[in-house]
Amino acid sequence: MVSPAALCRTLIVAALAAILAFAPAQAQQIVVTTTVTWTYEAADTGFDDDTIDEQAAPFDDEATADDADTDTDIGATRRYAPSGTLRALGHARAKFGPFAVVDDATVRMAGDVTSATPRQFAAMLAAYPHLKRLEMIDCPGSLDEEANLILARAVRRAGLETIVPSGGSVRSGAVELWLAGATRRAAPDAEFGVHSWADDTGREANDYPANDPVHAEYLSYYREMGMDDAKARAFYALTNSTPFDDVHYLTRDDMARFVTLN
Image (tube, rainbow, N blue to C red; front, side):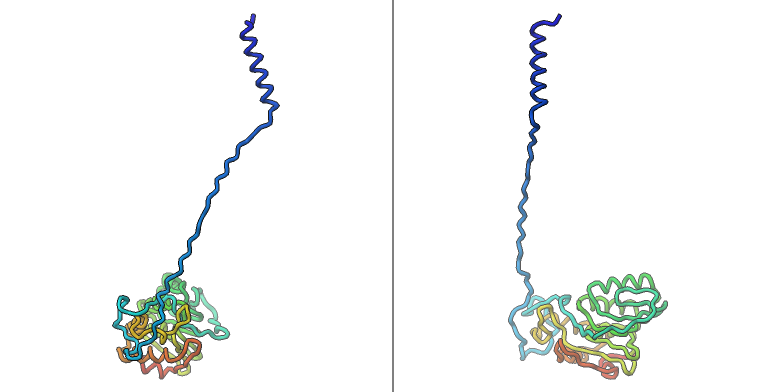
């Protein structure tokens, strides 16, 4: 027999269960709000309003970053002279950016040099380690001068011969690339287009003080590729005598005044 106390507890529990069954469910929602603040700082370009010291020796390559009036990242400079259309490279076994491998010994080039081109060149050499010559068919120059000089030194280390065949055209930064050949050849009608480099603000070589380190980059490179000091300075001055938005064309014989051709 159930005791009165137990029966009372049972009735209370049943009543509570009935109340809960018909009560509306309530849910709590917790919202977390995160605030992100972006802070922008003006980039330090390193440029100022100094002009060329006309009393200074042109393009002094003895300057250092500490004593120069201005400084620039050579990767932000470019030498580029595009044409309406690029010449076709013809049949290729494989293509790596502007490079087209045509046989075990020969690669042809048509197109510009960008920041990706040195990696494409390295991948090509890994896949075709017996390449001996680089034929430069239609090369308008570089959009990244730092990458262009890295590529040029890689061409020299690989011992490739650089060739501008009949009808070929190398312009702007591509002329530096042609200079990198362990040996160099050019057809009598090959053309070499030169002009000043420009940075990403539009300033050109002659807008920089003569003692700016950016000039030393080029003078050092020309000497590295076989020019003596006088020829390096003369060639650099020649290229920069033509504004960036124009092109001065040189012949094979003109180039032979500065470097040995085979």
